[in-house]
Image (cartoon, rainbow, N blue to C red; front, side, top):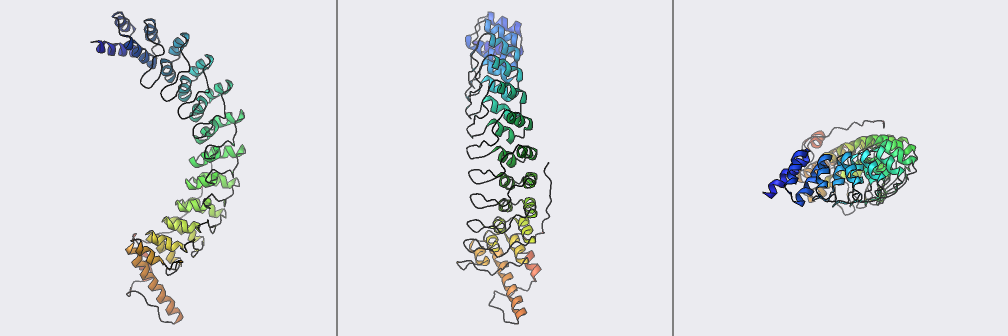
Length: 438
């Protein structure tokens, strides 16, 4: 019976049914029921019901299962009248929930300016942090609530505090493309060059997320184009790896170094080729990025693309005359890399472009033996037929006898290429498109 009465009281408080709340309170509702009813009333913005419950002994500092107090719930819901009632009773303004959130953080995150101002006037602590290291300023910056940010800055909130990922308010705003917020923070002397735990900058965050307008804005504010994170990635490399075409155009337009290398010796072009972003490959080649740069393992953009089976990127690099026979540290060519990983379509493309099917790595392996060892039998068989075909063609042109070859394959070169590998159709060359950054 008591449980039923408690549920009825909570429902009445939530609905603002003050007469019903008064009647139930006269029947001596249990204290726990009163506290739960107060939480429900504050969350729903029912100030009159909250007053009745407080007058009857409900605890203004009660918490729900998440550790939220009545003031936090009122702040989260932008219920200013309820917040005023609670603040007049001098409740603790800096209580924190189970996740470390405070009333001010809740209001800042949700964008409730009136509540934030009430709390700041009540001298709440603007530098409290939640379990992820976020302050109220970081939360409101991330969500783009400029009016609240200005209130916090006026209250001297620390702009350079960092969350557990090492991100400042400006970096969080940049990563979410909040231009006005970044402008306001920068105008208050926030550090545009601040770095996170992995040496990530605001420019890198914006670039990797594809926020072209923000990238332009940060560059205009003289963000460092060549700053690199702990892996050696610049903003251009990050954008290229993530396939952010418009950002790449904008960064190249503003003179970012196209052939800078990360800690693995990869350029933006190599990363784009490896990840199959052929439009970006085209843009970088147009901007004279060097397709023949090798990293410490001997990977070029072509070998990286072939290794991952990025057919369109390979086609574009071949079209732009990337060297076909460059070898990495094991003596592998792009053809061998494609064969070893069963990328028959890429192998066909390279063969048609003139790559040497019979070339040998340092250990004597060929594209055929690499494909066969890796279990790509169909690719190996077709490559073997191609090798025989090229051997006959060479012998014929030199009027020499052909070298020993596998069983005669009477198909012509186009048939061999079309059926090479696990993909039963020869690839078409890709077309690159260019966009200008916004």
